[in-house]
Structures are given as C-alpha cells and as structure tokens.
Image (cartoon, rainbow, N blue to C red; front, side):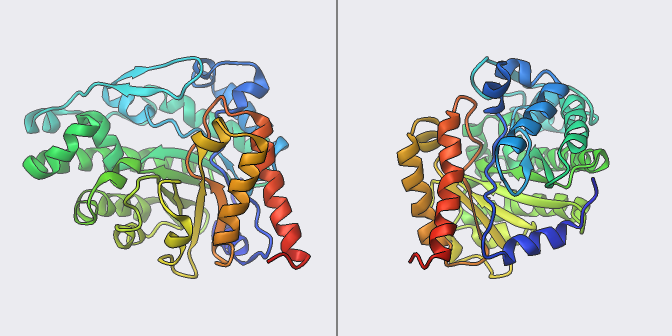
Length: 342
C-alpha cells in the first residue's frame, strides 16, 4: 500500500504522544506455535506473523525480520539454522583480493531473498493500518560476513582495496534488493549496519557511510524511507558519518546512552531506541522492562524527535508478557505526561 511516508514520519515526529516502534517480528513464532526454522522457510508464515504482531500491538509500523544471514547466504555463505535462534553465518568465503574480484553478485531472488520479498508483498495486503518495513543488511556488515567479522577489521588496514571491492558488490546487491522490496509494496527498509559500529569514526567514514549513502540515494523517496540501524558501541563517536548517509531516520542499540545520542541528532530528524532486547525483552520481567522503558523515556522524551523502541531485534523467545509490558509502559508514560508527570 503506497503511502506518503515523508508525511508519516513528520507526523510521527510532531505527535505529542508517539507510538513505539520496536524491531519486533521473530517472537511471532510463539503466537503461531512454530519454530524459527519454519518461519524463515515460509512467506505465508512470515506475513501471518507480522499480521499477528500488528494485531496485538499498537506499534507505529510493522517491521519485518532482521535476519542478517539472508544476503550472505545468497553470495554463498554457510548458514546455521535452529528452531529457537535467529540464523547466523558460519565461516568466510573470501580471503584474498582475487577471490573478492571473482565473487559473483547474485541476482535478487536467489536463496531466500525471493521468499522474503514474497512475504512483504503478502504482509502489505494483510496490514493496512500502518506502514510495513522490510529488513536488509548494511554493506559493511554484509562484507564482514563474507570475510569474517574479526578478519575484516584487520583487512581495513592491511587490504583496504579488497574490502572496497566487496563493499561495491554488497552495495550493488543490497540496492537491487531494496528496489525489489519497494516494488513489492514495502513502505521502507530498516538497513542494519551493526558491524560498522565496531569501527573507528575514520574507518566508518571510509568503509560504511558512503556505501550506505549510495543505497539511500538510489531507493529513498517520499513513498519509501530508509531507517538506519546500528547497535554498535561507537555510534556516538561516528554520528557525523552516520547522519551523512541521508537516511530518513536512525535507530540505535542499548550499547550507548540514548540521551547522550539524542543531543547529537538534528531536531528535524527522528531517532529511535534503545531498550535492551536481550537483557529486558528476552531475560527481564514485566516489572524490569517497565522500569527500563520508563527510564529511557524519562531521559529522552524531552527531545520531540525521539521515538521509543527496542535497542535491536527482539529475540524469538522473548516472553510476550514482557513485550506487552513494554507497550503498557509507553502508554503509562504518555498518560502520566498528560497528567503533569515530570
């Protein structure tokens, strides 16, 4: 369903009471009585899961799976799949510049990308009361999975040309993948670039930001937004190059102080975060997640461009009583604010 997404984002920023926008999709397995393995193998299950989450929560938008193994698998990486955890990439497939140059850029639709695009197309038909965002990996995070997350940090210094070759190929593929989601009816994408959060500001400005910007420039318009996600612990130090990507909005993890981050975000730009997905959603209690959510909102809602969210993708086995408590705390905060709460 096509929407004026620029207007949607402006209305979200301007609303005195803002709906939460957590990265919430994998816990749908509990609502459907299926495994992660089954969810990632069926476009019908993914679309139905997104619909059930939308029906249960009053989130600002529906956000699809943050499965950062999909794109690497298309390039040839081995994937570890389980019933209870998000899929992960195993090993590396590139170790030399020659291998990087020889690596073929797969067509969109290869591997599970075709299935994930179908899921978004179906979800858009089922969820009509809010925008639907697809999920893609960022270029540096994809290159890191092809090279190995630890090794790429060394390669940035010792083999920068090889890294750039891979980044160009990753960017080409991700751009086409985003265009396919756009064609399928998605209202935007959340582009996850967490490995870039391990870089120094200078390396981030060289190896991540410009490539993300290429993707944003190619796909973002009034009807299709890019939300940049990075849950690394260095995002405050590299915020200048992150903002230079030109993404419509930004989403940060709980490794940073969200209130400190908000001081660096332009007033007209929406930023989201950052209740701990593992510590609170997965392993907390309704009481602890209430306290954590109210704590983040107390610190950050003085910024009108702040939207409360999870710090990252909420794990599959996070208890729904915790997720419900998060949304209840958001409502409690705004009700208290309306009644004169500090």
